[in-house]
Structures are given as C-alpha cells and as structure tokens.
Length: 74
Image 1 (cartoon, rainbow, N blue to C red):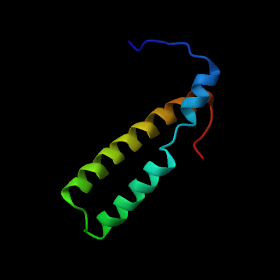
Image 2 (image 1 turned 135 degrees about the vertical axis):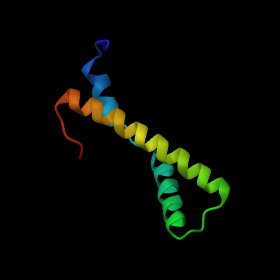
Image 3 (image 1 turned 120 degrees about the horizontal axis):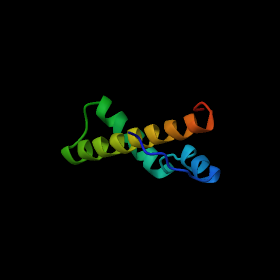
C-alpha cells in the first residue's frame, strides 16, 4: 500500500522545476555527440551512463510532481 505524504505546494513546484545544471547538461550533450561518432573512451562511457541515469531519474521525479500539480512537461 503506497504511503501518502503531504508536502507544501512550493516544494512540489520546486521538484517539478528540477533540471540538470547547465554545465552537466552541456557535458551530457557532448558525450552523446561523441558516442554517436563512436569516439568515447571507457571513462567517458561511464560518465555518459551516469549522466543518462541521473537525467532519467530527474525526469521521472519531475513527471510525478507535474502530475500532482496537474501540469504537463514543457
């Protein structure tokens, strides 16, 4: 049975606005470009996998917050 937790509206709105920091997003984009070119080192591949996992987690959390707020992602 899922637990129900009450949270202030401002907290849910802050979660809905979560994004990767600009520097991290640029790094992710660069790694994805290098991956498409087949030019990643082993260390870069590990970084890419970590960034993708983090990005997916943020997206899932944001989606849940947006659903609670009755909003759609932009």
